[in-house]
Image 1 (cartoon, rainbow, N blue to C red):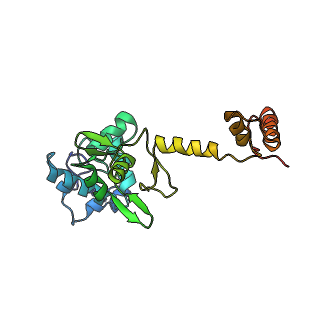
Image 2: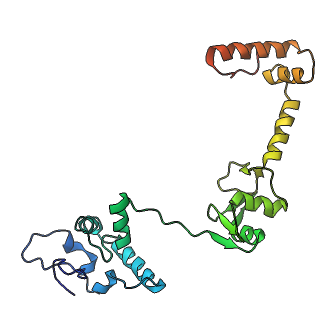
Length: 238
């Protein structure tokens, strides 16, 4: 293993320390005889080379000298090899953008909605939890987890956007679409209780004379709206 003090591009071993003070290089894993210098310089862009590069990154991330090694490689513009847990492309991205762009996870593709739903969900009591990514491809169409689950369970397309109807994180069993939301709004209006602003509005929609409790509740809500900008009190004292 070479002991050159980073003069040759492909030297990745720690230097001879006899003529300098101890520093981060003394603790570097790449000094170990366990690794060959070529470990940090995978050749090619084929799958095997990419796997080798990621293995070098994993070794670097266990190294106690990772941070200073990384900083040194960036400052000295090392254009080849893995240093401090960063590949040459990572360092180029840092110089160009000031950060390493997140690597996008490939969108999983399935032949059918049922295939995607079966592969990317798991049952959890009364819930069905989505365990896939934020998007899947069914044929040439991209779909969200909620769209996949809705169509898989109901066999029909939703009306408008699909939203979760459950407090459980990732649940795609309890969903609602625009038609369901509109139906609930109608039911809510129809069952509005007397003695509330909603009850007063129900009387008006039905062409009825509002009862006293509803008139008082509506007046209280109007006063509150003028004072605070919101109608927080629905029900007035009898």
